[in-house]
Amino acid sequence: MQTFTNQNTYMVQNYYLEPVIATLESGGLILYPTDTTWGIGCDATNTAAIDKVSRLKNQANAGPFVLLVASIEMLKHYVVEIHPRVETLLLFHARPLTVIYKDAKNLPPNACGADGSVAVRIPQDVLCKSLLEEFGKPIVATTANIGGMPIPKHFGEISSDVIMGVDYVVKYRTLDKDMGEPSVLARLSDDEELEFLRE
Image (tube, rainbow, N blue to C red):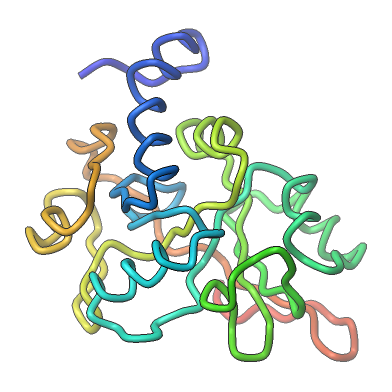
């Protein structure tokens, strides 16, 4: 397996990213290693694609799912407001961090909570960041398991139903047994205090 590094950007774009992006643009589903665990992904602005994820996970109206964006600049296009405390946290938090924002924008209803909120993470992982920058839109990042089943700790634990149910499997880190844990989860309270829902 070839190695995904910053030193071979040409290979990254041509070997890994082109078929992944083509799948996302066509409304398909991908199976990919995120900055935490393996995830099922799709174009987070595509209503039909998000519905496909829900059906694959056997969870009707399962949203909202966590979304990944490339940067704070991209994030600002999909949430109404980023409080200064949250922006500071995003800049300096060392571990993967998912933040729940109260008001989403430019996203389909099934990408958001019933109250209009949305959960978003900015990954530092090389593959995720490169993919998001090239795709230019947020990508869904829900755990690669059928609803109610354990979250797989590595590729070898992902069920065949999930693997066969997506349109493209990213062949990167498939032999890695040391994937990350679910991200830290935080939100800003009504009193504008940071609340950590999962650490």
